[in-house]
Image (cartoon, rainbow, N blue to C red; front, side, top):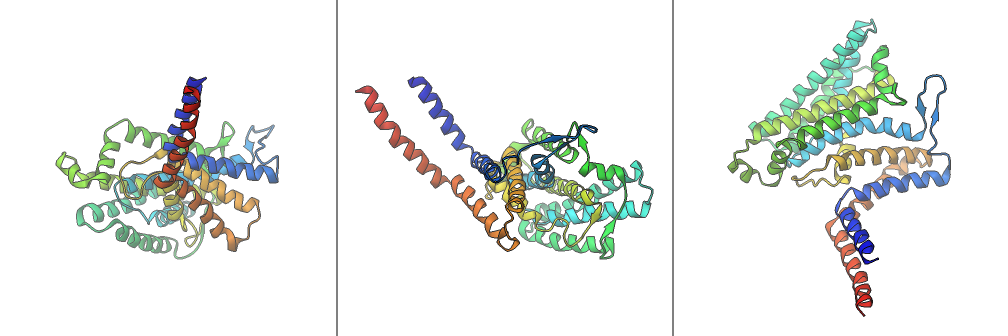
Length: 355
């Protein structure tokens, strides 16, 4: 009996040490709230003809894919003590380039879609390269650098589209955001594969440790032979490319780019997902798993706000309350209070057993 109790206690301690455990708890709580209002909320239906799955959970997975992309890129940037405020604008540029190219091509072919994707990701990588060079070589602060790119990127998207909303018709491009694979949204499957590849890259090699070392102590990292210039350029390029992927996801869902709305405030969602996932804004250790959970939480929160018919004027306040509560539960002081309470409750039990 004592072994079982100690095992459960150690499991709880290990779980609470994981910052994103509270994000999981909040995610479950939101789903429970939705279930209380509608017991069929988590129901998934299957199309008898196509085999596609549909339901609120499928919608959440589809909506979380763009957030997941920018959150993963933001995680690596923040791990280096940086920030990338330009991801929303890069999304707009990516969407503008892809829509404008397919609109001009007008043939709706697979080749046009693939070329549009390549061009969108190429210009996204170029914008990330500019950010990386300005931060690592020129020495500008990441906040200022990416703030400038945030403004310039949105302006570039307006130039590309001549300030107009651009639409195109291409079935393959539309399928990326609205299609399904084995019943699941293609957009989420692609996002999950990309996250897995990034995780393998940074966790199965020394790359992740080097990124963390730059964030923890840049001077010590240089003395250890780590060159931060190349790593910083890499993380900013990767962040921009993933933002470009998110832009493709967002525009493909409606096959229209709205320069003023595409990617608007997405940088805030990305930062919140990273913080909710347990990555410190001070740099250093990061958690891609936590960022993915944070992205799922934000998508679920957005869905819950609509489902509960919360007025749009109160939406920011409702969202802020939930996020602040999670961040408080993740704080060192609150976790210390939990540890002290467990210690106080376990001491009388030990005394009773010994007696």
